[in-house]
Length: 280
Image (cartoon, rainbow, N blue to C red; front, side, top):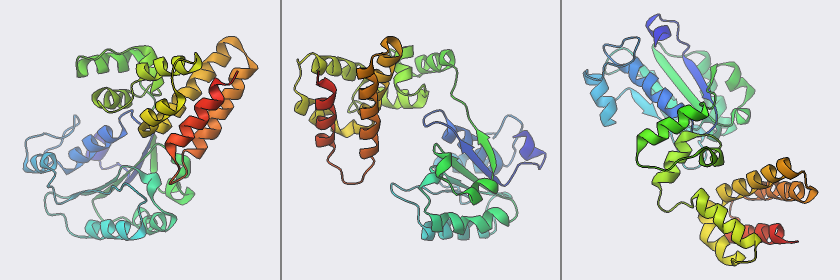
C-alpha cells in the first residue's frame, strides 16, 4: 500500500505463485485498499462507504472476471469497457482476473492495449499459478510479483488457528505445502482425504482392495489422487533407489498428462493406473 500512497504502484500487477498460497487474499486486500476512501499504509480502513460496498460485493468500480472455462475476447472487452467509464465512488477502478492463464490468445491480445495505455486511476490484477502459460507480451507489460510458498511452521500454525483440525507436515506436503489447499480439503466432506488415500493405496498394493471400486470412489478427485501417487513413488525412489519405483513414478506422470484431456473417463483412467501400480 505504501507504493500506492506514493503514487508509484504499477497499473498492471501480475501475481504468480503456487495454487493455494494466498494470491487471491493478497490481491483482494490490495484492491480494497486502492478503492478505500481513507487508505493507510496498513490498507483499507474497513469503515468507509467504499469498504462496505466491497465487503457486500456491490462496489461499482470493483470488477472481477472469472469463468469455469476459458476467458474469451468478449468477456475481456466487456470488462475493459467498464474500466473506461468514470469511477462512481472515489477516484479509482480495479479489475481482477483470478486465473489469468484461462485467457485465450485473442483475449490476451485484447487486454494488451489496456495494459499499454491504461485509463487514469485504473489498476489491473492478474493472478496465475501457471505463469509460463501467459503470452510473453502480457508478461512484459506487467509488474511481476512472485509469492513464495510459506514456511512449514507458519502454515501449520495458521491451519491450527482456522479450526479444530488435525494437521501435520505430511498432510501439508501432500498438498504441495499450500495451506489454503489443505484448509479447503479439510472443510470439504466430499473430498478424499490424504489419510484415506494412503490407507487405500496400501490396501490395493497388498491386494486387499478392489481396484475398480477404489477408482470409482476417487474419480471426483482424479488429478489429486494421481498427484499423490506420483509423490508416493517419488519419495519411495528417493529413499530406496529402486528402479521399479522410478518406473511407477514415470507412469504417474504420463497419467497426469492424460487426466488433462477433456471428456476422459476418469474412473477408467484411475483403474488403469492402479492396475499398473499393483503389478509385481
